[in-house]
Image (spheres, one colour):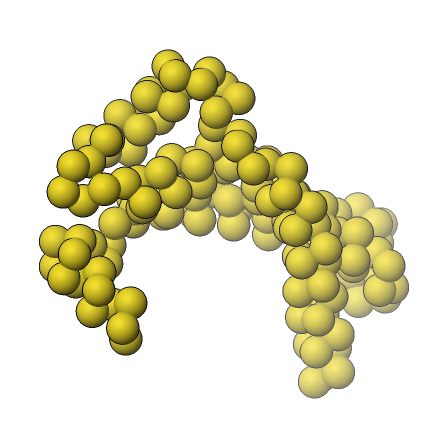
Length: 144
């Protein structure tokens, strides 16, 4: 609640709570479509068909890890834009919006600037998503 109060006070009221919403949606929608699509496709590929109920934990871990990697591989530049917008100074903003931030990063740092922190994000994403998808599948199968 304290953070919300601070944002409301210092970031322009309720608008501050939604700072970066557009690039967040532009990241989440296609990123999750890629992630869940890759996860299901890999499971079916490894199972040799649509019945994936007999896959072992190793296969689920591989599918989950690669699915997480597909999320970030497909939308990482959008996440960078979101991040710079969210930390931009409210009173003296450097960026006018998502496209301005994108163009500014590209102009000042090149394509490389859109992939700052990509390595650590992937290093975290692969095991985290492998564990999440495995936990989901184990829980689902144990509940019937």
